[in-house]
Amino acid sequence: MPLKSYTHSPQSGQPPKSMVVLLHGLGANGQDLIDLARYWEHDLPDTVFVSPDAPFPCDMVPMGYQWFSLQSWSPQSILEGVENATPFLNDFVDRMAEHYGIDDSKIALMGFSQGCMMSLYAGPRRKNKIAGVLGYSGALVGAESLNAAGVHKIPIHLIHGDMDMVVPVMAYYDAKTKLESARFEVSGGIARGLPHSIDEEGIRSGGAFLKRVLLA
Image (cartoon, rainbow, N blue to C red; front, side, top):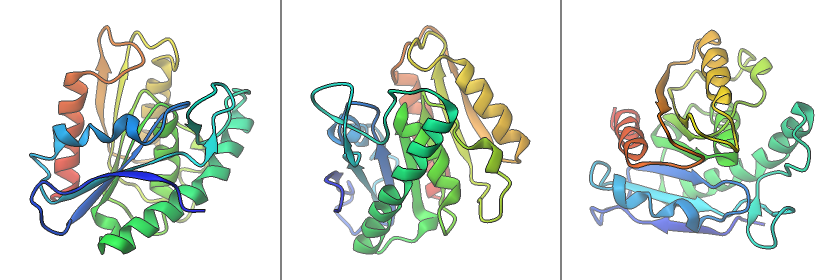
């Protein structure tokens, strides 16, 4: 079944030339991130922003959705969950790309928390190379296969608060180290005093990254 999604059309009013797919965190839905488009549309006037609901009802809160369960935080359980959800995400991206007539090279994935974990896994492993991944407050899953055949070394921009008590900031350092060891270009940095959230500077930094990779 296609994922329900929310859309922010290009500011220019013209057919989109690029697309940003926004992936929410555990227990949220597609509405949670779609308003970020208002901050980025000025620099990306010909970009359509789409934000799907994750495919599964959240098993930890009565409302909202999840890409995978976090009842267990074991690496194997999380990897299996991400692998299970990736076909749903790829199908959604494929449908949206076909609908708008957008090439993969003009698609970026942006994710927060669990959505960041999905973006970092699915983005480099898309059949065709995408423009890049913007990730907030997440973690890297499946690092052991980053050098496998078919993994694209796309630009990645990571932002993480040093006061994050949900996904500790060590996840940022782990992701950066392993991605760079696999020859990915990694930008971004640590947001001082920021908990599990996205702040104004993070929005600005992320927007600059999206502009760079989508308008290249």
